[in-house]
Image 1: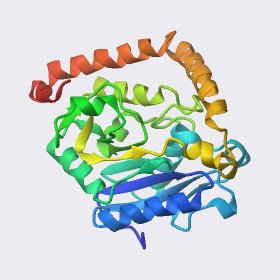
Image 2: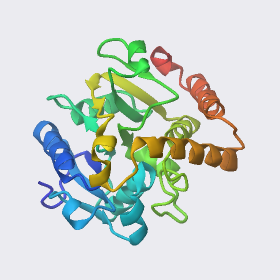
Image 3: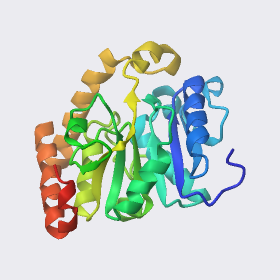
Length: 277
């Protein structure tokens, strides 16, 4: 697995925080169903030596990362920057540890959607637990101004368009890592997509679920906060980040901001109107 660098069109980056068994199962699932289209890499988000995956990856091992982890914004920034040192891929599938995929291909389906819609910069599988899924026809795709970052694919050309080229770091690259727990940084990236003539979609051709209780069950092993601690801290940090960066006082302001770019996209690309919700 990952012996040398293949010419596969996608790199799958899986974020691990001290749960090697969980992460290894994800790696093995992806390679079982999509090995012909993706290389798989593990981002070690400050994992201890005994908490690291047995599969190839990138290790964040500085003291702050080990103590607090990187979370998704800093973690995927770090992984993408390390990935660039080896090879640039056409697409990147960014996968959190709590993704649960059915026994079928996922990456190949998302790549087919990317090929079908050249202005698609972000695409996510649908979840039966999301209200958005009810708005998507069976086997179809629709564009949204909000997608929950659990496991989504980004187009390499889109990453190149919006990334920080001047002083890239794990704190500022694709995501704004100054917002440590990431509240609303996913909406910010979707807004950047539409502002740069790229769309963000959810497809019902691929499905997954979030293991919502994973953090609470495994908080001690992960060396992270349980949700009763994480959630209020995430909301508080996120609201302060929104006010500091945008002058917004609520999540609704951020959603409205992204929706404005969403509406504008269809004026520039009327051929995508059939995908509007």
